[in-house]
Length: 619
Image (cartoon, rainbow, N blue to C red; front, side):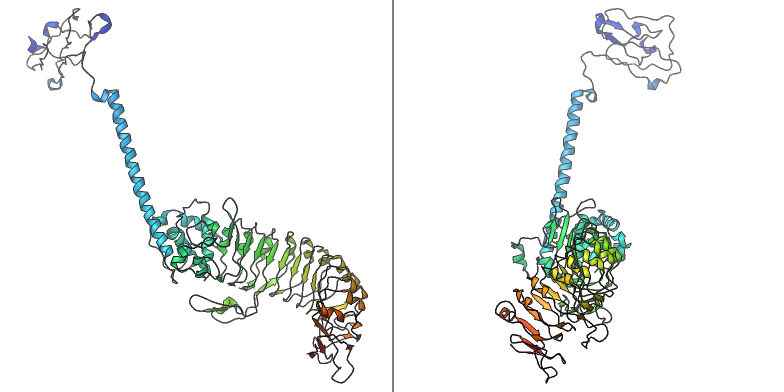
């Protein structure tokens, strides 16, 4: 009875290699008569338990399309028994097991993913282009005098801020959070993040140098030059768009290497910044130290005020530093001595004159006052201060040292002799005292030595004649005494010699014989064929003017007044008036208005009274 038989959940299969022989996994107690016909499905009744057979049954050979049933255990749950399924050799496998179906499915998903990525990239690019267009429109707009920062965007999370703090601001332990909105660093950061079309990120190689140049621009109250690109240029909006200047405009989205005055090497690293006479008004930012490989920093003849940042001493590749003609004050940082590769240092001319600059808000900057007179109280600017320490000997590559017109004190150190490549030494108009060190005569390449208007108390070094390349020697305005050494006449290339006004030690207003340059002018002076300017006035030098001086055919200026030189102007000197000699001063006026003049001169341009020092043109 079929109703008393269970259906096994174990399937059988035909062995194709055995001629259709039915191979089965048999289960004891199942007879073939109990199998269901094709299409029939039975679930056993719980009321008719199965009897367990005593021996296994094997399906007869040649019986096709049959399934094997197994007995239902008495303790099985009938409702969970699966039906026997007729096996069809031509049946197709399920779709998820079909290799071709799976291949096309995966391919379809991949194409959909690519399409999605393409759409996302396109939308992002369009958005960024829109943002860049907005930036460019902002740039083209007229600059405002008061800082207006951009709204917060996801650019603040780009890592640029943290990178700049860790790489630059750490030098003074500063952060952007400590700065006010008008700080040049804040404005430079805002420009980098929101207004610069380059949209740099934290790992861009030029981030530091672009930020440092932006800080310089915002530190200088000269919007005309950094928006329009040069001194004297002031493009309007239309001209700015069509400008054909051979340089890039500062704070534009062009490469900073193309900006006016910026020079880069072939690897796009800033090597030089030269903004001579550009009307810059402001304080020198220490962030320029971020230009680690800079070799030339020239910012002369502007209105830069304040002090020199000591951090500049970290620019070890610097070859030339020129800050002359500004209104700097304070002590020269000792860190400047660390710039061992310097070949030119020009910090001269930091006070005096009538240089004034007007800021965009109308305030006037006068460099004769500290901080340009913009401080709380007016304080006279005396330029840079400090002393010339023995560290000066570390500048072994120095060729030009210009510190004149400042307030340096102390003495000239012996280590000056280490600067064997030095060609120009200008320390005039300071408060340097002491004597001329003998080591200075070791500077055999020196061409220009100017020590005038200091507080030197010294005689002329006997080895002065070893400096055979010397063209200019000025020692006027000091307490120089003694005779002119014969070695001086070995300086065949000398074009200017100033030994005037050396009566400074006790009574500079009196001509006293035991002070100043004494002795007489040697006949050896005729060997100075290149001499153009000779100043010996206001000295107790005596004797006569040698006729050999007439051999100096290039002579333009001769000053021998208020001396004890007597006699007559040599006849071979007066003909030089028809050539280059344009100024001749001597004591050719009556002494004290009545006595005989010290010297008789028919070709002098000015005759002076030795007693009063009054000179009157007599040309």
